[in-house]
Image 1: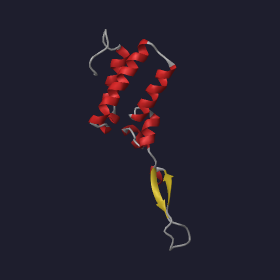
Image 2: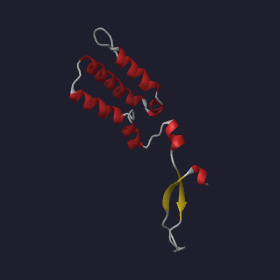
Image 3: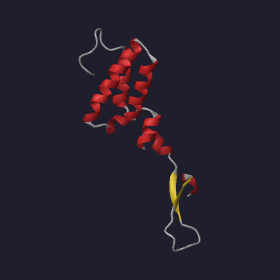
Image 4: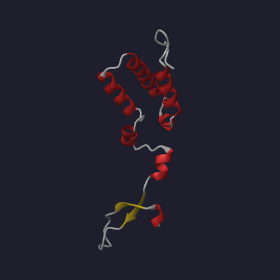
Length: 115
């Protein structure tokens, strides 16, 4: 956790958030350079739980998006959690139509069971 800790230590909710972030599958995609952002997020979350404000909520949401900690953030980065990857549609290539000389290709989602 970030040092120095605030007077009285971090709130229980901030500590739980820290643990959840670092045990999340997205943490494997972070580099050492992302650690500062995660530490900043920890301090913001701790501050939020001590004195919540609407402005802090927006800042926390944006930083969580940036780190891929929200569904929107993962979607923006094209990241899938393991359980999401298992549910992702399979794509198949279909040809460009009747023009056999065409190099146009389209993708479409198909059921995995449809073969």
